[in-house]
Length: 158
Image 1 (cartoon, rainbow, N blue to C red):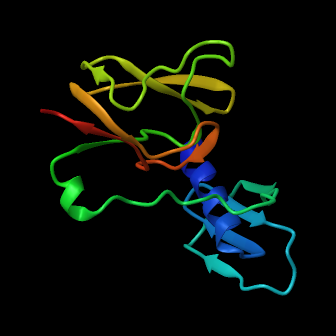
Image 2 (image 1 turned 180 degrees about the horizontal axis):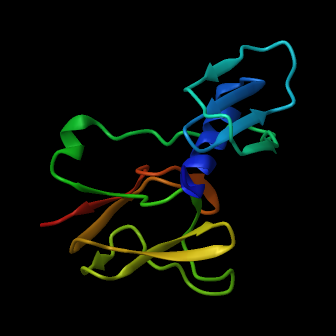
């Protein structure tokens, strides 16, 4: 199990409202406690050999739930290409607070253009476009947390 999978599991547990989750695989044993009492507990187990590594990670709950962006109508989606997040992290539209945004709605982009930055564990990853076209819609707010494969932009390739 790599670090990205563990991060995804922690976020999932935090959103689910479970107070504790235990995950055991062949080489790792993880217990995640959110600090909430009297709530549903989700437990996933697998056989574990006698020698295991145990990690306990406390979770800090967010003060407010993360807003889920509204998805456009299916008929509009069919002609657009969706650019999705390749990693879990925090979405930023500009390289730094005093610099302009990478892209705006209505702007034409080319393959390889930087669209945004996703910060994960103090590493800032530039997300480049894999398509050419025009930005039609921004699906995530600046400085918002994003999940793996979450839609970020809609691009009109025509």
